[in-house]
Amino acid sequence: MKTLPLCFIVFLFQAIYAIDGNLTLVMVHALWRHGDRTPTETYHNDKFTVDYWKYGGGGWGQLTPIGMKQHMILGRKIRDRYINGHPYNFLKPQYDQQEVFVRATDKNRTLLSAASNMIGMYSAREGENFNRPGYDFPEESGWPVGYVPIPIHTIDDAGDHLLDVDNACPLQDTVWELAKTTSIVSNYFNSENVTALMRNLTNFCGEDINPENLWILFNALKIEKQYFPEVFQNFTPWYTDALWEQIDIVNSQVQDFQNGLGLEGVVVKGIDIGRTLRKIRGGTLVNDIYNRMNRKAECLINTSQECAYTNNLKFFAYSAHDTTLYALFSLLDVAHFAVQPRGYPLYSACVLIEQWQDLNTNKTYFKWCNFDILKGSSSTSSIFASILVFLFSFVFIR
Ligand SMILES: *[C@@H]1O[C@H](CO)[C@@H](O)[C@H](O)[C@H]1NC(C)=O
Ligand SMILES: *[C@@H]1O[C@H](CO)[C@@H](O)[C@H](O)[C@H]1NC(C)=O
Ligand SMILES: *[C@@H]1O[C@H](CO)[C@@H](O)[C@H](O)[C@H]1NC(C)=O
Ligand SMILES: *[C@@H]1O[C@H](CO)[C@@H](O)[C@H](O)[C@H]1NC(C)=O
Ligand SMILES: *[C@@H]1O[C@H](CO)[C@@H](O)[C@H](O)[C@H]1NC(C)=O
Ligand SMILES: *[C@@H]1O[C@H](CO)[C@@H](O)[C@H](O)[C@H]1NC(C)=O
Image 1 (cartoon, rainbow, N blue to C red):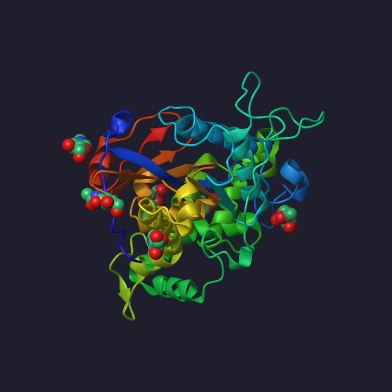
Image 2: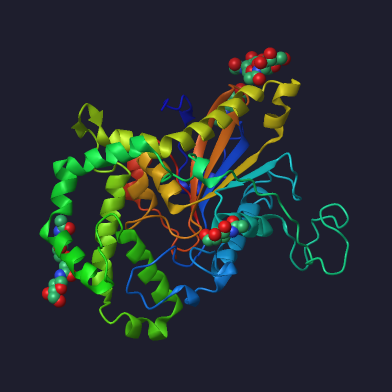
């Protein structure tokens, strides 16, 4: 990965409303996780069969109405931030196809999350009249009042190496196999804690549970407990919150290893395991964002036709997965700051990357905002803030 030859600007949390008058917001990238979903798969003995999952089209891994609502709310927050003047008037009130581009992975849940998000961003509610009937949507009875359809782009999932970070990649597989030979990972996998837990879970689940497939169980239990609290304990008599906490701890540690965290400077066969895993998983996305920002900066002082697309483009959204966000956070070394207390980002977590331009000096700056609508409080810890203060400013808005 090339290092970003951009200047970093430091805004403290409160300072966001006091932007330096010489700086102009020129482009925003958004990356979010899909909303609340059904389990993507489950374990052998599970009594919650696929018949239990009727949400969002039915079956495994579908966006639920809760997930749709989460993204509608997030879309509304994005509208407030960039359209309604809280704090910026950056985008047009109505959808402008030249300003906005949305790309999702080719999964039902990310496609529908993007669609739900765009409802929050561009569909008028009762009492709002920023849209133009006859232009933004048909004036026909039967058309949902105020609903503006927005195109969501995708590419074939198997070829999506930008947003689906676990897609087939022989290099990633090879480096991960090497990672498991390191004493850090193998000592952890073979520790009494972990092996005893896997033994017990294997027994409960009726299939081999190991550190690498543990996430399936972790997810399934969490979602089943959320959706069927009355019958969950009957269906899963071995479940306790303490056991789930152990699963969470081990699963989070495994995911950190898979993202190269805790393996910095660990070299096997000449390969820096931590660095290489982070590059493989997060590098393509950082390059994509970097290239678009760079072109934006170049085109700001260029009115030729070849810059027209870039000059018009102001908001680029990626609708993706917890793995995508975590790969990006890991690459930039902010994972443990951005996600607390541990684990992957929650449903509809969103990071916004704002590109600012000083029109006097032509210098580019950027800052981050981390939207996480599911967490309650709005405090940033000053300890974490001081670690990162020279790199980024995170703004938590809820
Ligand atoms: C803003 O730009 C003007 C003109 O170049 C300059 O005099 C001023 O110092 C700048 N303000 C800041 C805060 O950099
Ligand atoms: C929706 O999800 C199911 C299950 O993952 C998948 O088989 C199906 O192809 C998806 N449908 C579309 C239209 O993407
Ligand atoms: C092992 O489990 C104990 C009790 O849950 C915990 O305190 C300890 O941190 C665990 N050790 C590791 C290496 O996970
Ligand atoms: C595994 O199960 C045994 C027997 O129920 C129990 O004593 C032990 O604490 C369990 N260990 C873990 C790590 O869950
Ligand atoms: C800017 O415009 C000129 C033509 O006016 C063109 O040759 C040049 O490549 C453009 N720069 C970029 C970054 O597109
Ligand atoms: C910024 O870019 C413009 C257009 O290329 C140029 O005219 C101006 O001199 C530049 N300003 C600085 C301070 O480099």
